[in-house]
Length: 87
Image (cartoon, rainbow, N blue to C red):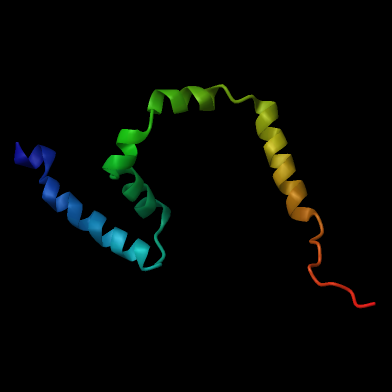
């Protein structure tokens, strides 16, 4: 039975190691970040997963395209200079 479910204390060690690396500013790949996300008990308890899934499913394709367009457009706009000109 223990082999089926594993020892929960052994699962904490890799998570704590990854958290240490994360807080130290070291690079974590996507799989490691996903592991931290999926094993965060507080985060997982606080998320209303059915509500989030419903909201995602209700987003219109036109809204997604508009967000992509606005993000692309704003990244191309010229930056305003913060320096003042002397007279």
